[in-house]
Image 1: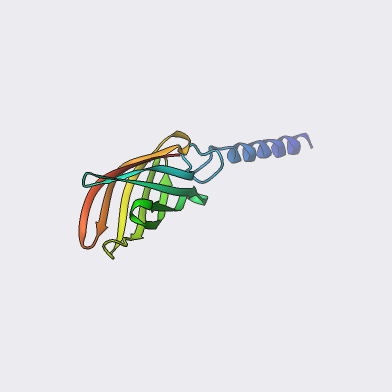
Image 2: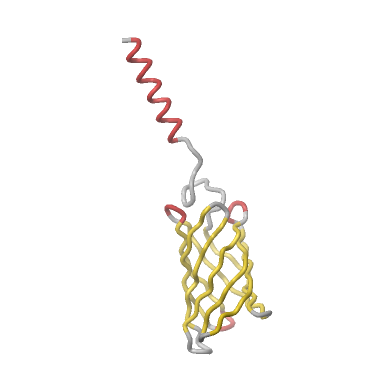
Amino acid sequence: MTTLRRTTLTALALLLAACAGNPGPGEPGYPFNLGGEYTGSFSVEGEVIPAVMTLVTGAGGVVTGSFTVAGMGLAGSVQGMLVGDRLAFLAAYRNPDSGCDGTAESAATVGEGGASLSGPLTVRECGQVLSGSFSFRR
């Protein structure tokens, strides 16, 4: 009986240790989860464009959200994947000024606690490919 009890306790301890690992993207306590409203700007071909993003990190590090550029009457959606402190995302929108659909794509760096995100940016709109960067803070 003592051997069975020891084996059961050892198995239980191993199971608890396996479950007590570090949290992954989207799990509570993950140090780079994004969530909430972020203010900042996109800089495209030297033009600084103030904007607001609202993001949430879901299960497995899937990031979803939206962004608005009030000064241009532009709004769009954000879809991405968080791995470590890196967010690969694609933002899709329709520009009311040009009438074209566009995308903005990046491999961003996320700050500790999900407090910021920034990185290079590639914008595709109306057959043009434009380069830039962005920076947002919560």
